[in-house]
Length: 205
Image (cartoon, rainbow, N blue to C red; front, side, top):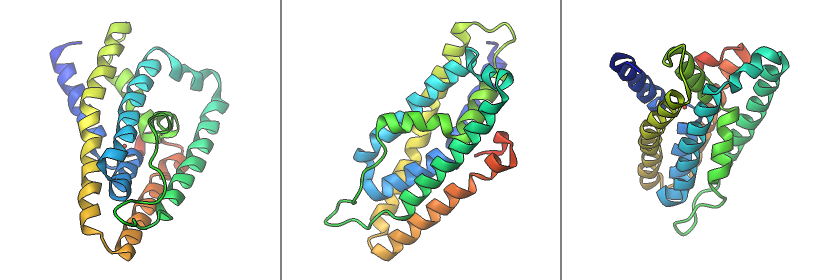
C-alpha cells in the first residue's frame, strides 16, 4: 500500500473508531455501570471482533449481499432487534449498590459477535476494503488493514470506556445514573436511523 494511501487510511480508521456510535455508547455505559476492569472483555471483543470482520470482508464475505439480496434485509432486521434489546438493557440498568452494579457487562464473545449486527462496523469494514485497498490487493494487504484498524481501534474505544468510568465517579446519585443510562439508550436507538433509511454509510462506532 502506497504511503499516502496508508496515511489516509490511518486517518479514516482513527476518525471512524473514535466518533460516537453503538460500540462507543455501549462502552461508555458499561464503564459507568460496571467500571473499567469488568468492561475490558467488552473492549477487547469490540476490537478483535472487528479485526476479524475486516479481514473476512476483505476476503470476499461482503459479496454475499450481491448474490443473496435478502441477506441485506435480514441483516437490517437482526441489527434493529438486537440494538433495541441492548438499548433496553442499558436503560433498565440498576443503580450500583455497595460499589457494584447489578447485572453483567457484555462478554468478549458477545461484543465480538455484536460487530456483525453493528451498522457502523459494516460501514467501516466495507469502506476500508473498497476505498483503501488496491484493486489487486492480496491477503497480506487485508491483514495489514485489519491490523492497523485493531491498533487504532482499541485505544479509541478505550477512551469511551474511561469516559464512562469518570461519569461513574460523578453519578453517585441513583436518579442521575438512571438518567444517564436512559440518555445513552436513546442515543443508541438513534443510531438505528441508517438501518431504517437503508444506508449503512450514514451510521456512526
